[in-house]
Image (tube, rainbow, N blue to C red; front, side, top):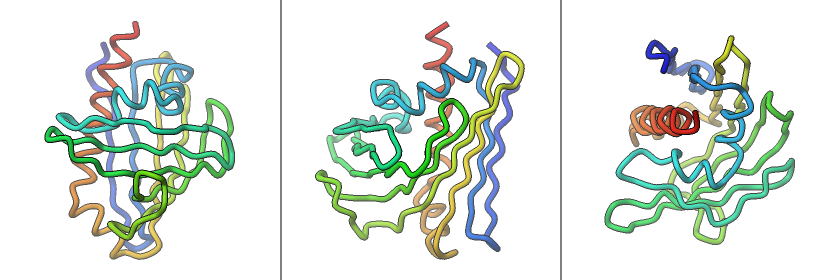
Length: 166
């Protein structure tokens, strides 16, 4: 397994964006599948000891993913991702928000827009994620909640999942 995988996490306060660049030691098709299939997302999306539990997923333009982050005591925090555009194995854009278990938006935390891009990099894949927020205060709330640490842990879970598929 390649051990020097790129991980850049930058906060662009001027433009209310978070930029994440991450390399994975797997081909684009496998990395794309891990981001777009609920059975795979449930295996890596949440930072341990939390788990992701998908209720619904319709990965198409106009579709959505409704899931819960389930804590070690069984507590659930629901979220949904509404897919806007999809170019298979290249990119997708989506709006992400907290919601109730039926998908109705909540005001627990402001949502964000995601642009996730996938690029072949030799035998590996480089993924670029841009999260855009309506206001700087929305971005800051995500950072305060521990988004960087939690998302980094999730991406490390994805490394382990991809390694187990070899």
